[in-house]
Image (cartoon, rainbow, N blue to C red):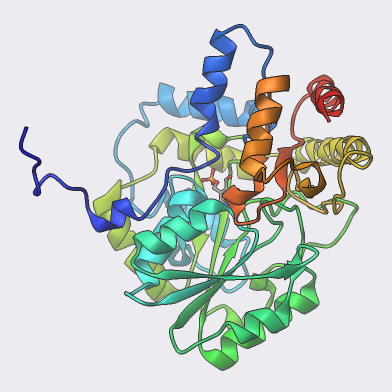
Length: 382
Ligand SMILES: Cc1ncc(COP(=O)(O)O)c(C=O)c1O
């Protein structure tokens, strides 16, 4: 057969890899079909049910035939309710997306030109790097110190090509929560260097030990350069609804709406009604969920301590232990997770997938018995 030169894929798509955490789903399904008692601590999603007010509101919207196209930026009622939560914001500053993943994709498409650099602290959620590349930009990785921001390293990585600094707090995969004083310094760096700031706050609700949550949005003087994303996925156990949003300066928000109008149009209309109900929910249930996740964090942390060095996460729902002393004969963290998977049927994510070898990510938002069973299995193998 003649090899066709015109059927090659675009350079853009050749440059990126599939989402690494999503890659575990078919593998897990395969092991399950083989009858193995698989425990997945790989996927970052709460395991409990979606709250009933959300389900009822979504069903209600379906019963009312809310099944048509709706406003591209999001339902006015939803965007107004979201804008009310951000001082100085109006509904025009809110764009609702199919998950905050799509919001982030759209941000990079909207702000990056060829050669533009986006500073990303390591370890990082893998989609950031690929999304920047897809937009033609260049991810610039900066080291962290004990999972906290290394502010001098961030400052030193700013070049004439830097377009934005991306901050993800609470962090996936480390669970680190950045203190206000560090965010203030990041805000200052953005101001003096005239950069965009991107704040991924997908886990903003999951901050433990009664710590106050600091957001880059708290600094009024950077709101005209800040693009913030949040999500209904984790906060309200609505991962499959695919509703997230961006809060952005008007010019950026309207550019993202233009992109959205060609990409997907509106987010599923009845899912947005579910999201409106989520915002109206009483806090009690949500606070109970957060307390339970804090308890799971403590349970998982006690289990992990004797096995690997690990920094106690202050937020999100991941542990990111250092497994390097268990690596045998040049093994990478990916080899390690494969060994654990084959021997124990426990699915973990290798640190390499987050730009940091020698670590693994363990999601503790799992039923207690599964968490304990998984740690027992890992302990036996080690
Ligand atoms: C750091 C971070 N940002 C964004 C997302 C995207 O979440 P969603 O698209 O469900 O809102 C995730 C999901 O795992 C995440 O971990």
